[in-house]
Amino acid sequence: MGTFFDLFTDVAGLWQKYSSQYLSGAWSTIKLAVIATAVGCIIGLACGILQTIPHAKTDNPVKRVLLTVLRAVIRVYVEVFRGTPMILQAVFIYFAVPYFTKNAVRLEMVPAAYLVVSINTGAYMAETVRGGILSIDVGQTEGAKSIGMNHFQTMLYVVLPQTLRNILPQIANNLIINIKDTSVMFIIGYSELFAVHKGITGATYKYFPSAVIAMIIYLIMTIVCSALLRLWENKMDGPENFDIATTDTLAHTSGMINYPNKKKKNGAKRRRLALGDLR
Image 1 (cartoon, one colour):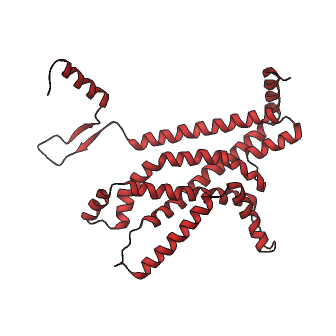
Image 2 (cartoon, helix red, strand yellow):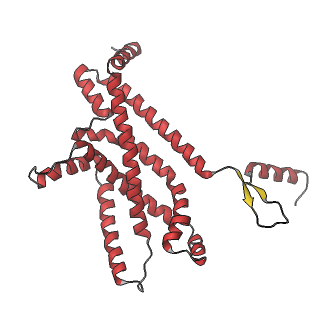
Image 3 (cartoon, one colour):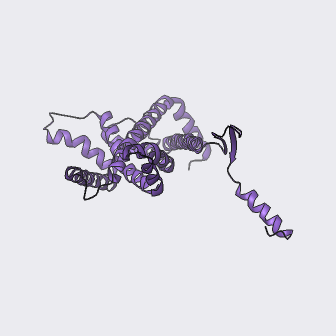
């Protein structure tokens, strides 16, 4: 029966001998996850915007037909890639091209891996972006149009910046998921962390100690990425107070605006009530 000391010894031995391979696999994993998530966000952004472009019966018939067809294609794309496992998507894309071309055309495993993870992420982000755009108060769109902005300007300067802030947690969630789900790319031969783990266990027969190392590396990558994305989220929130410019030459050129502190406000209200001050 093995002990924790035996486990520590096996883990230390594997790390000493194969650390470079584990780190190489981790780098391949994080690179694939980050790039594919970024590309998937671009795909999702395009699909989300296309699904929310307004059109009426009075619009150009060509515009209405084109939007209807595009939305139908996007709907099929989203449902297919959200409703099937990524491992089967990888198998289908990697092996479908040579199958239908009688091996005349073949995808390399690295481009295939990036393609699969990107379009899978794009399918999820399409619905996220659509929901984020629809969550913006319609009054802001109407206000932008009332000052002369067209639909493109309204989306670019008013709606999308707020949408990005609202969907940032979901972008972070997709990145974390992709760091873990890229492990299925071993099915097409992509050498990421899980594939390295399988190769080392095949050579050493120490499956559990190697799995411990892989799990720790995955955990470190997800924690670091989560922390960085939280910093970005806080950066987008801005400071708790800010200067506001004014055009009144008789007043100060700027003032200080502070966000209300609900805890302090409620505490002050309770103290006034305790003293009998009902103002």
